Amino acid sequence: MIKRLAVSFSVIVVLVAIVSSMIGSVSVANAAPPPKPTKTPTPTPGSPTPLQIYGAWHCGNDACLWASVRNITEFDLMNHWLIDRGDGSGLPSVNVVVLSFVNPLKLLNKTNDAGTVNGVPRGMTPEIVNYFKSRGIRVILSIGGITFVNDWNTALAANPTQFGLNAAQVAQQLGVGIEIDYEENNSPNLTGLQAFISAYRSVLPYDATGNNHAARLTIDLGAGNRWLVPLNQKASADWLNPANPVLDYANAMVAARPDTDAVTVTSRWNEHITGYLQTVPLAPAKLRGLGKPPACTTTRHSKYTAHQPTADGVLRSVVQAPC
Image 1 (spheres, rainbow, N blue to C red):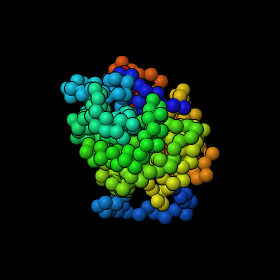
Image 2: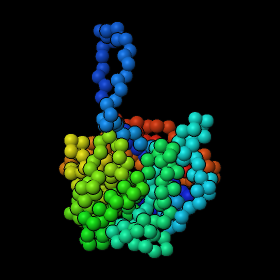
Image 3: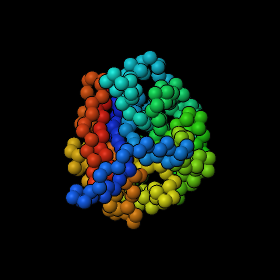
Image 4: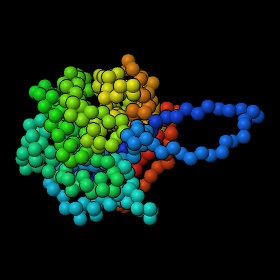
């Protein structure tokens, strides 16, 4: 159940978590006349709003390395479909783009080499970030991935506090959020990861309003609860409690062999919600479900499947990306 690295210009699919609502039933026979509509109150500035996410993991054009600076004209040619859905509305196709991946050990050490500047891939520039943010699309940097599991372990063993502080610094400098993609299945360093998160939050406290993009801190969990079990348990119990949230939400990743039917996909997500193999079930509002298209297309227009809501408020929305 690992997240595979995509090849050139592929965007690993995403998506999404929406809060569930509860609707009471009313007897039709005894129903009172409908009340006159009232004006929707203006939200209080700074008040929390429900997360509604439709986004994409973006691997650049070099198998998720982002090792070279991109020409914005060429980048727009290959990615314009993300910022313009092509229906004449001028609206973007997504509201979140996750640039994947940052090497955790290089970030800890603030490495400078042919493909990295101060621990960040050279291609993850302010210009690329602004390309999306100027269109109202939030940007998140993903640290890790299955390729960098050992580097995650090394960084957490060496100095998890400094690692977290470095991540927060990058988030502030670029105006982006951070995604924890730590795919150590059997024996994750949860103590070290807690220190990383605590250090990050010491600089950028949890922001329920979502106004501070750099305060957005998320985590990747298994597609269901049968992989990354210790991480799933820790995250659900200590970091994703709606009464005392530390992380903004969790991503239920795609399976190693991507499922092609919505029933199988959502049944995996439901393992998080029901608490299968967990001491604490994960609140639906804190789960973002991810899907993956069966293949890339040769067109650069996005294609959408039908939304398929589940009983627990998780909504599956899949965008099929170009190669």
